[in-house]
Length: 490
Image (cartoon, rainbow, N blue to C red; front, top):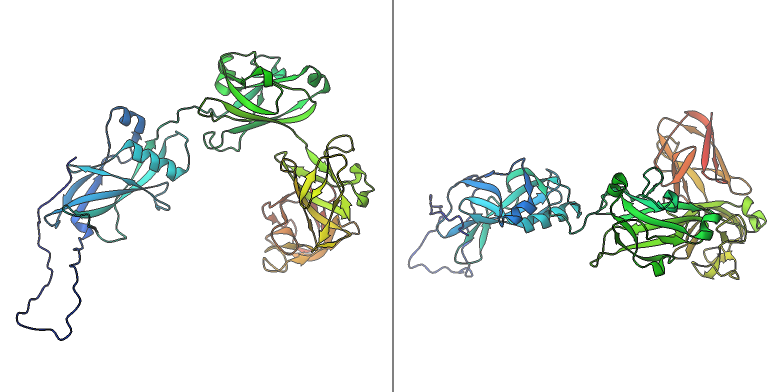
C-alpha cells in the first residue's frame, strides 16, 4: 500500500551556529540531533465513517479494508518522512479506557482491517456478543522517517486527531445463543407447550457473556417414581412449536447429575431425575468445540436449619440460613457452643457436621460444629454463619456488637450508635435520635457484615435505609426469623 509522503513545504528553523578555529574549554559530549517537533495544526484529518454502521463481516467477505478517515491537509512535513496513525477505540467520548488498533494508509485514506477492528471492539466492551454498538474513535499521528524506525508524534503526547463515532457490527461467533431458554418434559407432558414450559434464567447479562441458564423444578414423589423428564428448547422453538431440542447426549447416562447435552431436531430424548423435592437444572449454552453443552442437576435446599443446644436441638426453634443460588447460604445464628446445619426441619435428610476446620461433612456420624473466638472455645452468643454446600465449607463469625450508622444517626457515617441485645441475642434495640437521611445496621463496628435495603426485608449489603421518622425513636432489629426486619417507633 502507498503511504503519505510529502516534500518539505517550509523549512524548520534549527538555530545552529558554527564557529571556526575555536576550542571550547569544556567540550560537551557528542549528541544526536533531536527529531523535529511538528505542530498539530499542520495536519487536518476528517472522518469518512462518521455516524455510519460498519459491518465487519460484509467488509471482510469483500476482502476489503475499512476506510475510517481522510487526510485533507498536511504542512511542514520534512522530506524523507511519512505519516502513520495509531487508532484508539473507547466505549465513551471521554476515551477512558482506550484500546489501540493498527491502521494502514493508502493515498490519503486511513484504513483498518476488519480483524483489527473486531479485536478492538470485543476488548473495548469485554464481550463476544455480536450486537452492534457505537464506539468513539480517535488517532495518534506520527511522522516516521522512511529510512529508519524513528518517529515523532505530531503535536506531542497529549494531542489526538479526528475524534469520531461509528457503529460497529462485529463478527458473529460460530455459534448462536438465544436470549431465552425453557424446560420441557414432564412439566409439558413431553411436548413443546409454551403455556407449561418453565423459563430458565441467567444473570441478566448478554447470553453470549453469561451463557449459563438455570431453573428450579419441584418434583413430586409420584413424578420421581417414574422419572421426571426434562429437556431444553430455545425461545424460537417454543414460539414455533417445533425445531431445535437440546437434551442428554447419551440416554445411557440420562440420570447422571452432570453431563453433556446435544442438539436434536425433535422431542423424544430426555434427561431423568429420580428423586423428589426441588432441583436446580443448570445448562451452559455455549457449545464446546465438538458442539456439546454441559449441564448439572442439583438438589435445591431453600434454607439450612441450625439445631443445637441454644434451641434444644430443635430445627423448628432454630434460625434459618437463606440462599439466592442454592449453593451459598448465610445468616445470623444463636449458638451455644455447638450446632449443625440440616437441609430440612428434621434429621431425615442431609445433615452437615464437622469434617475439619472450616470444612463440612455429610457423613451421618460427623461431629457437631463447634465455635470459638480468637482460638478459645466460646459459649453462648450470636454468630454470622455461612455455608457452601457445594464446596462443603463454612464460617462462623462471632458478633460482638451491632449498631446503626449513617447520616440519619447521631454519629453520622463516622461513628455508629451501639444497640443492646436480648438474652438470646436475636433482638437488638436502641433509643436514639434520628434526623433526615439514611442509615444501615452493621456488626462488629465494620462493614464486612451489614444489613440494608428496607425495614421489612433487610438484606446483607443492601442499600441505605431512609429514616422513616425523625426525633427520638426506639429502633428494634429482629434476627430470629427470615426475612430480617426492624421497626422504628417514635
